Length: 62
Image 1 (cartoon, rainbow, N blue to C red):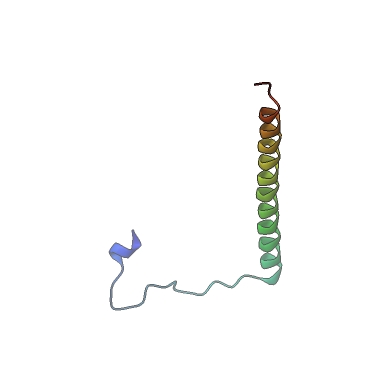
Image 2: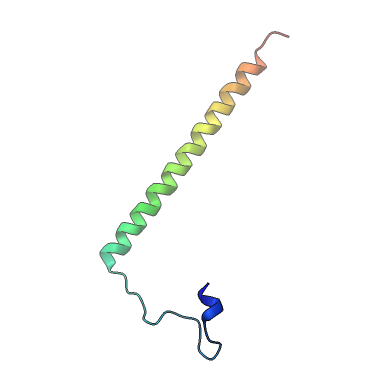
């Protein structure tokens, strides 16, 4: 909603730049890598379940 009340005579940017400390950057990077690892493990688990189901269906008597 701030775009509606913002004047067009000045650029749309923050009033001050936000500086993130190196420790905070490292923490955010670690959290992002853990989230990516968790998502990839979920994908592998899903693929294994699908493979097991496909093998089970393949071996069903016709």
